[in-house]
Image (cartoon, rainbow, N blue to C red; front, side):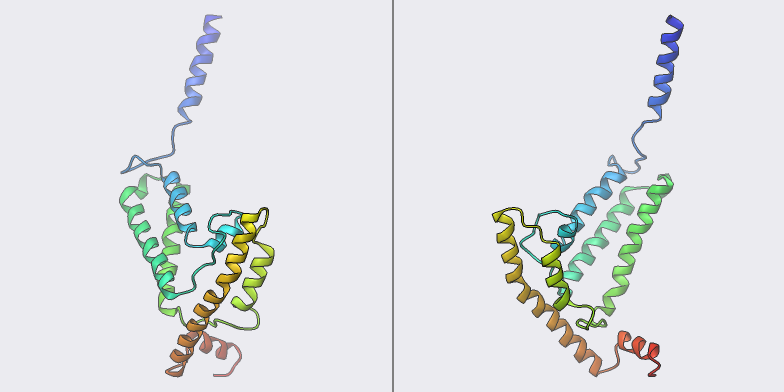
Amino acid sequence: MKHRIFLLGALSLLLLSGCSDPIESKSSMNIDDWFDERYEEELQFSPIELSFLGRKEQNDRLDSMTFESFVEHLEWKAKSVEMLQSLFDYEALTDQQQLSVDVWVYQYEQMLKSKDFFLNGLTFDQMNGLQSFLPTFLINFHQVDSETDLLAYVSRIEDVETRVNEALEIAKQSSAQAKTGITLQVRIQMIILGQT
């Protein structure tokens, strides 16, 4: 009987030793917790994304469409990458954690590369743009379960004018840029359509 209890105790210790916290390095913070916290911070840049996730924080607002808002998000992302690289030793992480780091850094690099092309896209066209997205979003994703939700919905409807004006300003800037030279987006479309 004592032998059986000893074996069960030894087996329990062996099993529990495999349940240690995920790898931590350079910091007392667990990298998985760090990613969870940064993800929550990043979500705060997009009230629309929060609604897509079924969450109601900031559900009285729409995302800002300005270049300044983009730059603010980009600067935050750059600081998060610096923090990530200073807090955690990449080589000490598991393969899955390294992949998470790689994806996070890749997302930042793609945002940074896109900065110079912010005005190159087509702001409005027959398939895309706020003129079709906002009504679809408000109808299909803004949940109204209470009076507070309804008031938030009305606030969002009132915010549409501001966001469309931001998009119009981007379209004007894009158009002005195009007058001085063909934008990359238009050039690609011309190549695809064989109009070079």
